[in-house]
Image 1 (cartoon, helix red, strand yellow):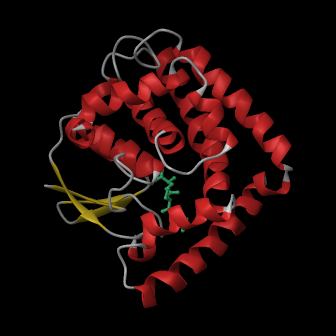
Image 2 (cartoon, rainbow, N blue to C red):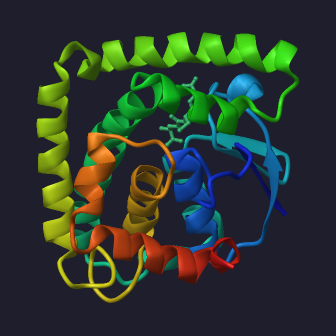
Length: 236
Ligand SMILES: N[C@@H](CCC(=O)N[C@@H](CS)C(=O)NCC(=O)O)C(=O)O
């Protein structure tokens, strides 16, 4: 059976990690059985979560994992997408995972002191204090360095929220009044979108980004739709 390593659940969303939500949603969309082991990225093969162990083979990076799953277990929810739809899905995933994700990380790791406490408790709260406190501090420095390396943290907050506004508006326009991002059927793009959007809209970390997303007519409804379809146990 596939073993999924990811952060412990919290906040009544599938995971505090955007990429862990994406992968677990994909597994459920594809109807693949898995067992979950809560962990932190410390011992992950590429130093990041999620990763899987599939019959003794460890694979890290949600994209590499989904490619592996598609090769070994079939195309799953992306069956039937045209080459043009697959291209669109790729472009939207890049916006979500390579841009909006970082704005969400900025809100969470570099935002207010209250947000930091909420985030710290969710990710490191299950560890004993002697281990959790220094690890949390080390990861905070690490993520701040990543945000500077990516370039986002070199912009002013006003510039960051301006970019967030454009991303959120584009996503809301693409979704329109369809249930899923490419139409009537969910596909791996929806798993990616749910991963990022649930971690913006449905988590207790408040920010201008969350306000922007909450004000759209359709993105919060998309998150509710995904949660009730794939994670009904979290709504109970
Ligand atoms: N490209 C990777 C990104 C995974 C990722 O960034 N995971 C974050 C959690 S959302 C992580 O484990 N970060 C720990 C670190 O960077 O030290 C994927 O698609 O899986």
